[in-house]
Figure 1 (spheres, rainbow, N blue to C red):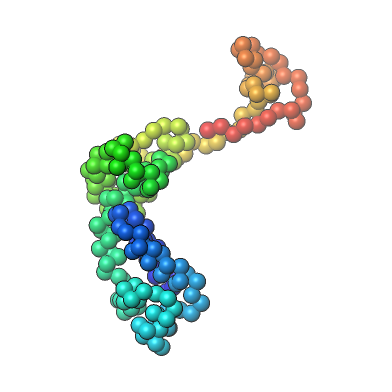
Figure 2 (spheres, rainbow, N blue to C red):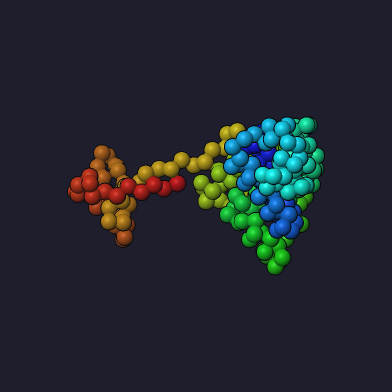
Length: 219
């Protein structure tokens, strides 16, 4: 149970950060998650023996102690479920930008400076969530499109996921291919022979050793 609760508290901290809540509240959840991750005894056993007082004694704050009690009794935390619903669109937008190499902090800063018009992504994110049926499925679709596009050095938008929706299962990242070079110049094979293409476009018969060939991975 410790790992389950630690995950919930870590996720709560992450969602609160996306929502823009105070660092004090976020850190309280992170602290609780850390304590639970490193706790040797199962927290449910501590609760069974000592109640809320026992959980407080391991360093968990009062509010999170009650959340742990709620989870032990009901296998769910109402506030966490509600938070997931409230932040679903924001989480999806943050994940989309993460796949484009933009961190949450950078996203927030760019939104403040109006370099990124955040509201422009709200509608397509909501539509994608409705189409996918869950935040996990929507994120999975974004990841597939992102991997496919990045392997081909293509840009992509949330709308790209809609366009590729019926092709998602067949979308595969472009496979890496090893290509031979000699002293920085590409080598091509034709009729069983190797040729080095010079800077001037000339095809020069390669007469060097195999060990002198440099193999580069290109996508």
